[in-house]
Length: 357
Image (tube, rainbow, N blue to C red; front, side, top):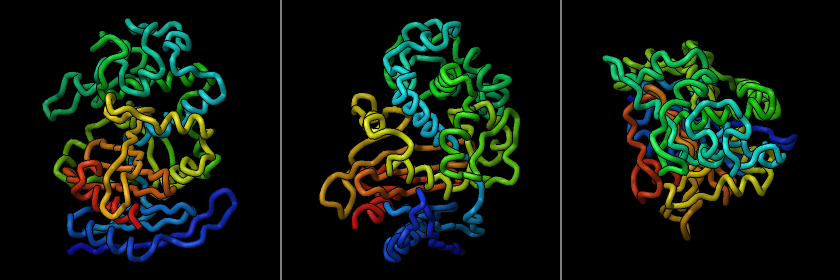
């Protein structure tokens, strides 16, 4: 039997008290669809005024305040910090990595632009293609380097797959290298930048970064088909590409601040949220695309960030035109979420309920 729990939580942002949570009809619609699909995890519906409702659904629902790995949603945090540096005039998207990291030994250090890292056009070596062990875990994630910094200087600086600007190829090395560029510009490692630029200002008390070899003790554990290999993955080696953790409520606090314009100036945020179909609608580590949702008068602009590490799968959907967001944290894989732009499926139905009202 699936037992949902729905909590309407009133939050405060920038000293302004929020007024009301999402309508009960929207919460009920999302809850019903999630139950019917056998979803197991947490779902958050965020409103433009900063309020939210969190649903925890499953045979043994997780605590709404539970800590989750954020997986590749970490890339969204890295993109924000990078664009803050762009706004400050310290980072040029069209400059090569070698301008900021002069002794980086990658063969194409002088031609890979910062923009190529953010758009996965770098042609860098692919961690997912490193030699897999008997359990199917690529060596990069099983043992990896001694730290993300070592991975950036070592594996990620190895023989390239393609000459930049290369065809889109999703690659964790891009964010790991970008984090080292940011460290050289600011003099601070990525975890310190995350605390200073995002965690402390927004009071995201649950948010942190996995250290090398650190197990996710006390965090939500997967229950799906791939849970057996979950403990074999070294979460710390991911660094800025997939190494953050926190609650679903703290991710909404980040989303709301981004939507409201308090993290990145308007010009740089517009840069982040403008993407080309020729690059799969990806720019600045986020997918930005129009989706024909059911019940809306026209296509809806969606900013999407996916996350997947081991047995945990996540989606972070921002709706810039209304200031709303929908976040899904699933502990059961495989999860048939679908894609909103397909015009059908689980994600399409949930986003239609949240956006088209």
